[in-house]
Image (tube, rainbow over all chains, first blue to last red; front, side):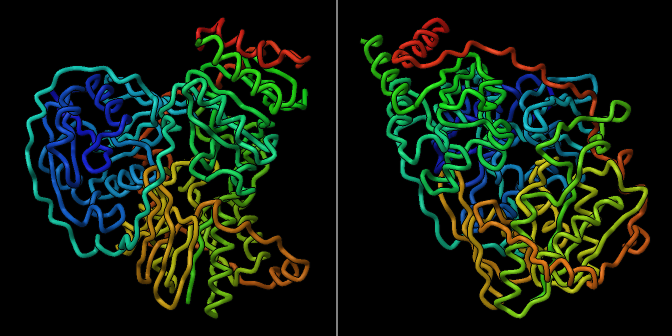
Length: 318
Length: 259
């Protein structure tokens, strides 16, 4: 069976959920082999095995941590040369996309980014993307070389499958040219205890209508076990950190349930959330464009509606 | 300090964008084009660096005649000169071909820094800066939320999901910046008048030594099989809060089994 490489997204060996989604998709195309760059491969092995990785190609080089993107692209290119896979799947994070872009040039192969679905086709993987702020879907395929596909979080529900996950160490040679953008400082993000925004089943987002007070948003999110998001207006005002921004220049989310509170629904925001399964909105303005998207909407003040809703959820959950 | 800013002329994101049914390329007819909003941040950073370090800013674009508008806007903001690469073989080019043409054009120019926006507002791949660095064989310092240049040292803050990184590199480098960097300035009346006298060079693929069969739709390394407009969402139920809006909201959630 043809081999599909999956680049593992991990934090010191702790495998992040999008990797499990990629392994699940890779099984539709062939036999998944995980590519683990950095330290902690032994720790990652079990979760990679549990989602069907037959092999784990592991390489550790301080360059992966000390320099931006380029060393990972070099390592991956060398591995592709050695393993001749029939496709390479990479998480669609900024870093993942940049690794993919450099890899595409190196191995002279076509690249498709931001996949929301991947299936096996007659002549290679067929990839679905959501474009133009989610207003169109496009089906596309690679016509040259080894298809390189970056996949968005939540494209598929991870499905367990037993793989051998036999570890094969490899030693890429990283050139000096790849060691030019040095990471001189790294500050870990503070854990909030809430689910990761792009991975969450439920997202509760606040906009300008919060007036900067995210208390009701966070409380309602916590009652539902949801992630918290924010509109660009909120981030630009400095009310909430940029890493929580949902929209064209922030995160694209596609949860089971999206609650937009005090968000008007400008195109920039819609781009990041309109593929959500169910959409709810609370807004004072009954003409806010967000109401065109919703399955259920409440015209009212979020500072009154959300606390009442939080109380009601808590009551029902007993 | 010589800075080349790569900019793209894109269909207005606020307009109703669609695809040409015959070849699945972006339908640009009937949609106003403009300098991509995300590239304005790159122009702003270039101007700021040039002001501090007595630099020169060249605006570079690839695109049909209308794309000249994007160059003009950047010149009005304060860039010094422009280069417009245009060729009938180019339309339909993918990111791979775009990065090739940009790289060849940049190599013809004198540069210390190549500045880009984080992504275009139409294709939205966000890979061209990395590809450009790969092709030019110089440092890639990208997705900057904050950028400072001190002599030949570039320092940039890159915010990721897990951590926030500070990245350093020496010139020459390809740098891209996000919309977290300061808002772009508006062209002043003086700037608009001055822009009329600023030089813009027109280059073809022949000028760059790029073969026509390396670019364009037919040479793309990926192909679009189908495009489909997303079916409009059916309008849901809207209630007005009369003191029980929160309860009604949760009743809906319960009916959909979220609670």
